[in-house]
Image (cartoon, rainbow, N blue to C red; front, side):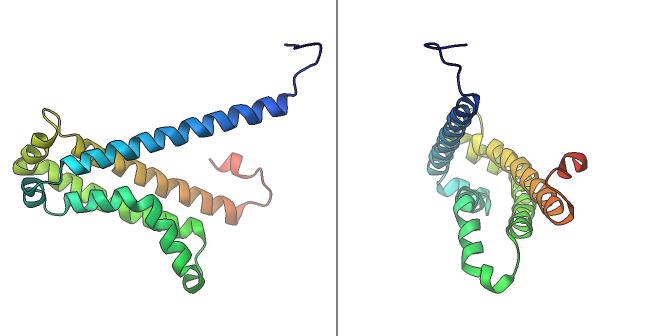
Length: 164
């Protein structure tokens, strides 16, 4: 496509497209964050906190984990001597296991399911968010592990294409 007699600069077009996709993903993340805040606010009832011991609290910590994990890393990185990949992968693995545990306990308790269902009738959305968070944390742990392996075991920048 030629506009006003000049050929387009494809590198600028690709950069513009990547910026647009990045902005779209950021807006999607903000929308999910706001939706999660609304769900937590609606589920902050005595019934939910009593029937689902620890579930609401974990979901609050899970909501704040994108801010907490890098903050903890920055505060303790000079003492731990861990790289970002092992640290974030460990955090993601721990959060994935915890998310699986508390979500499974919430799903097995009929009193908990009814208390959560009462906050967002007729569907217990907070439980579904717990399932999604379990999947996301496990994917983050696997991604971090792959990044750590690629970073430490590749001779050149293109060796990772053959590992995955």
